[in-house]
Length: 154
Ligand SMILES: [Zn+2]
Image 1 (cartoon, rainbow, N blue to C red):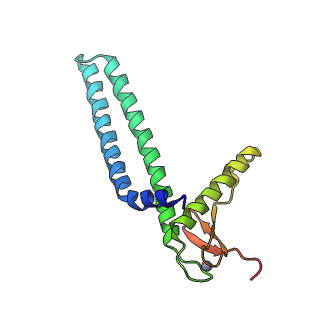
Image 2: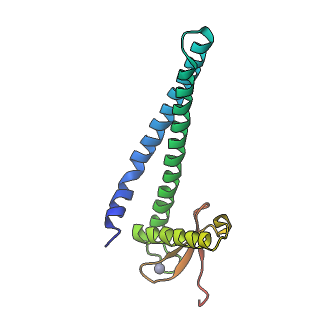
Image 3: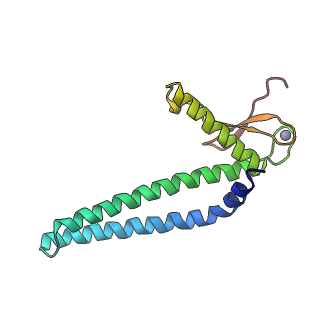
């Protein structure tokens, strides 16, 4: 069961992620205040330009960190949402392993498109999720969180 560790981590990580995200947002705000303060220091002659540059870098770094954590949070929420959804064919819950597999397959298709010099942005925004019980495949619209059927033989 290679996904057990990942499953454990993901099912326990959504809360810390929210907290980390808020902490980084707070850090961005503090850095902005520092930037304005150091800028004011330059105007009044109390500090050197060097401080402004330093604070500017801190602000950029903090915003960068926030964007990364925010994007990670979206992926985690997507996985959790899909894991809790039920198969439209047999009604059983997909579970985290099926959700992780669906995300993994999507990333593979993404890399494949990249390898063939297609724009990965043109890739359909679907994760193909396979029901662990009845093996039927369904498309999960990753932005609207909707399931749609994908069975040509039924
Ligand atoms: Zn099913």
